[in-house]
Structure formats: C-alpha cells, structure tokens
Length: 247
Image (cartoon, rainbow, N blue to C red; front, top):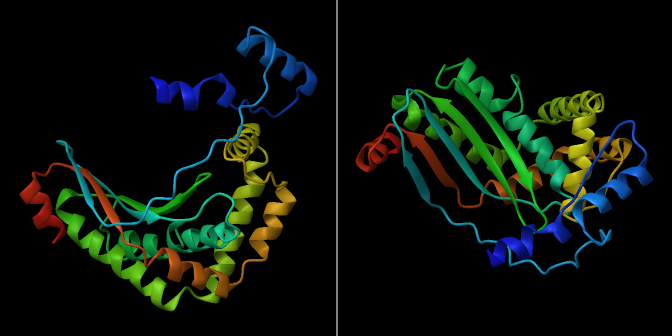
C-alpha cells in the first residue's frame, strides 16, 4: 500500500487530452476533480533505480490452449535515448509488417506461426525489445530457432539499406495516419509527460526518423540484439514438455 501511494497517488498522475478543448477550462476541471484544495501541482521528480541487468531466463505459464504464445526479448533503450529512433527502424525492419524479415521467414515462407511481430517499449529508466509469436504448441521449437537465427544474423550483419528505407517509410505512414486519431495524439503526449521525456512535434519525429542511417541501425542492432534474451511462454506444457519443445 505504501509503494502504491508513493507512486500512483494523485500527485503522480498525468492527465492528457487532445482535440477541440479549451486548455484553461480543462486545467480548472482537473484541479476541481482531483484535489480538494484545487491544487494540481506536480510531484517532485523521484530518483529511479539502476537499470536492470540483462540476464537470460525462461518463464512458463501452463495453460490448456490450442495456441502457444511466446515472447523472446531483452532490455533496450530508455525513452530519452537518442538511439531510440534507430531502434524503432530496426524493430520495424525485423517484425513491423508483412514485408518484415520475421513475417516473411516465419509465417509466409514456412507457415510456422499465426502471428509474429517485434516491438519496442521505452520508459524513463529502461526499455525493452521483444519478438512475439503465436503458433501451434508443437511448433514452438522451430519458431524459436528461426527467430534466434534472424536476430543473430541481424546483430552480426545488420539489415540492408533497402530494408531501412522501407522501415522508415512504414514508420512515417503510421505516424501520419495516427495524426487523424486524437486518441493517438493524446497517448503520445501523455507518455512523454509521464516519463519526463522531450515532447516532440509530429514534424520533429518525422525528421528524427528520416535522419536515421543504415549505420545507425546496424550499431543499435549490435548493442541490443547481443544482450541476453529471456523467454516467456504460455501454452499447454508441463516443465518437461516445454524443455523438450524449445530444445
């Protein structure tokens, strides 16, 4: 309870909004709704713990399902790390759409998974990179082997210049389409404020994406993809069954 109140109580709350609204009116409503005194002053910045060290481990949640769900991932970049744009380009090239490496090799060419994609997540003190796949329980081992092979190859050789350009185009398209959704704008503003990150305009984000070079992507791949990988699996396995499946 003490941890909850020290981290998630009102002084630490962020209210984000976008669309046709009056800023001063919104501030007044927030002050009235969330504090009896009418004071909505932000809480002082709190020191964060040291970023976690990457170490490999396997987490298994046994569940009777017809599909196995797995995530293979590691620690990545903080929200204020300037390399995060290169990491986003890398993630998009690896598993960010139907033209990505993982989608093509795992699903299209071999039909091993119903769904496969990569993602990044960034917080104020650390971040994560991961690959998700949903597949038949008996195919978990093959999917894992293929994903590991792709990650190792990209960590060693990087991605092609054409893959970088295609990923940049995909990211630009996603951002521009997201501008039509006020919810997306609200979420982007709220996350930046919550993690004390720089609030960038859409044009600034597009510029940062455009400035990413193939060498930037290769450098961040060598860093992030060579960190120890952890595995989480949900599926119809006992411990021995899972060890056999992923061997």
